[in-house]
Amino acid sequence: MGYDYTSIHVFANTEEPNRTRARIIQQLPDFVSGCFVPENRANRSIFVGPPDRWIFVGDTFSATEDGDPASLKAFIQELSMIAPTLSIHMSDSACVHLYLRHNGDLVDKFGTGNFPFYLFNSSEEAASFHGVEERWAPFTTETNGPATLRSVWDTKHNANGIVKTTAEVLGIHPELAGCGFTIFDEAEEIYFRDWVEDQSLLSRQFDEFHFLIK
Image 1 (cartoon, one colour):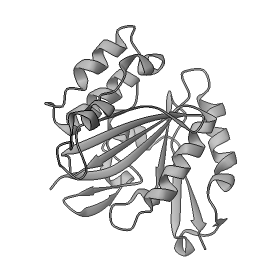
Image 2 (spheres, one colour; image 1 turned 120 degrees about the vertical axis):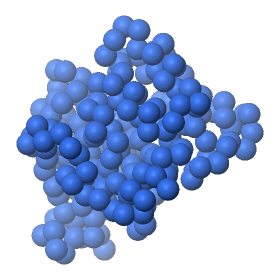
Image 3 (tube, rainbow, N blue to C red; image 1 turned 180 degrees about the vertical axis):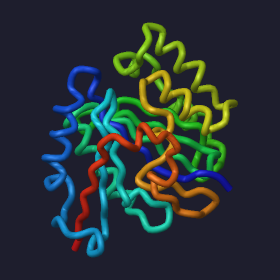
Image 4 (cartoon, one colour; image 1 turned 90 degrees about the horizontal axis):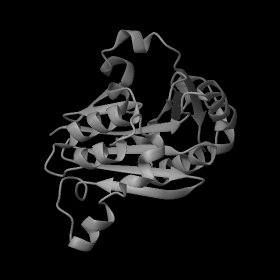
């Protein structure tokens, strides 16, 4: 057993973090079909992380046990209308998928196998998850970013290592890349604030919004 989570990141570059974050918060009511309620009445919660190169977003609908994959995907697509959005889906620390979306469309994807921890069914399916490195070039922090990503995206590497190093290449805090609103560790659900160890990161602004979905 290993880690399970979905980690969402909206690209703000280095010039637009506050503006991008504000747009996400402003449009949350349009993206989520529910009304704001106190936390103890909510059946869906979303947080928006601090202004940074990538804005970290967490959603309880990504939970392993009682999540809603269809609603989660729709939410990620809506976020991608604001700016390019990366979603990281980890299964049991054994299989990881990365999806890059923009304007509601899938730009590219990379994956190491079929969830939860199986090999791809065919070479054609594996090729569809190979990743086109040039499509990620605008989001890397180094001029040699695409080549670096290609070396990271070696399916012989372990899934957790792929996430950590991909985060470094893209300029995402590695601890935020490795969790969502919660993370399941050996089937135990852990709230992200109890999981992340970087206290300087946690001292920054994370805003939570709670919804009642009817």
